[in-house]
Image (cartoon, rainbow, N blue to C red; front, top):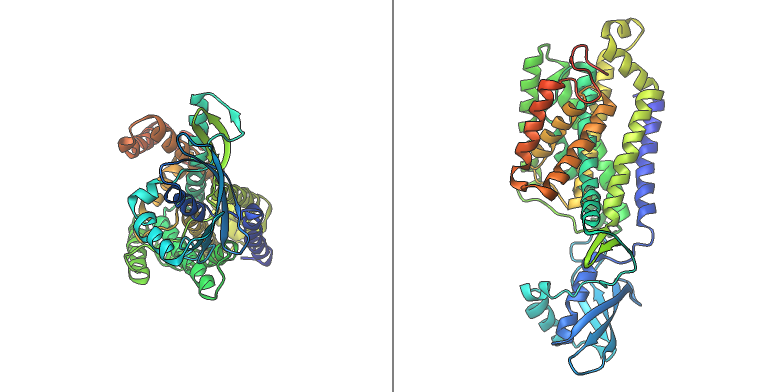
Length: 449
């Protein structure tokens, strides 16, 4: 890319890292550690009804203080607290290992702590014994239907961001070359593997900060996605004259990347521990609490900011003008000095970075992605790109939003086992009645860019 475009890319990386840091400010309570600490309370208060009042950072590093009320039948309620000490924090795999427990009566003896962990916390009864956080949260009351709909909408935010970024990758390549690269789902898996590798390197150097881990993972994902996409696309799209042969070659690239990941990272999926997953309570309908986790907000904001940045890139930069000119008329653009092969390589790299960024969001939100897990994401993102208008950047973003919202609404109100069938049926309907997509035309030729 040009010097200007490279500076934009570096500003994007710095902005995403700053966004994660800003969203993570004040998130001192780890949800997994809080769950373990709450789960120990029933063992300390047999037969009592427990109400958790608040959870806050403990007096020492890697500790939590839980304040609660214990009520036994026929006895007055007791205000109690527990301070839980953990082995690590952040992205460390053993951050939920309880190493110490102290109550108002003093610290728990080592033998008692071992018995608590071995014969209670590690059993199904111990996991199910979590009394949860305070139910009587001071939030607004809304109708049942509104609360359920709002919760489903919030849950759909990460999926929508992931589909939108992947759909944009398809639109970038198809809009320029008129060809579909079927390997973008596997490039998302490459991005997820690079994210885990980057975070693991940071942990290996003794840093467990989620911000540093995700920043390293973000850099690794963008580089790996851009590199694999540029190299693979050069041989499957840039060097093959026939559209049909090129499409088949991208299928081969998809299978190659899948097996490549299976060998490199092994068939066993490596999972990162959950981060920033302590829910924010927003509204309630009786006992049903509408909540949003910080990591869900972060992934949604990253998807939104990158989408807006990409729209600006395509409209206001030399790369975007060259892309639009070449997509409209390749010969005329070449006469005006646009280097077609170089522009294709830049586009492939940018599209691969978008696909890898979606893989990074999958790891941040869900913990990991297997070597073959990118296929479904890639297929649904392709459907999103077609529905929105393949070849159109705004259309791909709109299609990603539409598919994410469709899946969420169907899962919430209709049988989930036929959700994918309904999505594929919707694709058939669009190809029959609106082949150009939502932002395209009824006639897919000429292609809208």
